[in-house]
Amino acid sequence: MTHLPFATLKTLCLAALLSWVLLTLFASCGGDDCVINNTVTATMNFYLSDGNPCQITDELTVSITRAELDSVVLNKKTGASGLSFPLGYASACDTFVFQFARMGVSDSVFIHHDNHPYFISLDCGTAMFHTLTTADCTHHLMQSVQITHPEINYDAQENIRIVFGN
Image 1 (cartoon, rainbow, N blue to C red):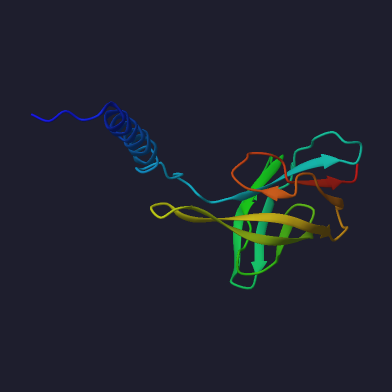
Image 2 (cartoon, rainbow, N blue to C red):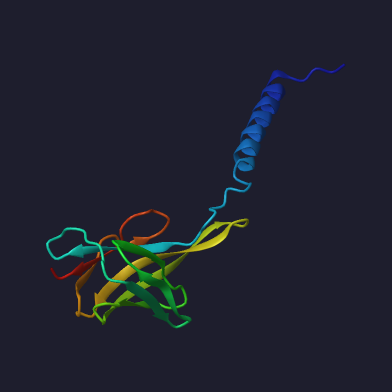
């Protein structure tokens, strides 16, 4: 029976330990850790010009107009204090048309953004994050549109503040 020198045993033990650590590390990265809903949304909240939050008491209908889509995304909602919508990834501008039924008025919000594909993994695919660059609106009922947090990702935070006149 041959005996291995001490240095060779030490090297084999270190190699085994390193292999175990690497195997444990990489084995924990796989699996079904995908985000269930990987839709990233922009959150818009409503405020009065004095800075206080407000609710829309009128029936609110919102449609989105962009290059690949023109559809109603909210129909006759009352009591809305804010909304969350996905932004388009095929273009750099989305137009949201807010129609106030009883008042017979509509305002448009124009949101310009940069799109950033975010690679999650081979199993989970890619999400689309956005950076808001500018926002503007028509001024029938809306006074202004302000970008509060330009980065749109999985973080739940207000991105846009829509201000209405008192």
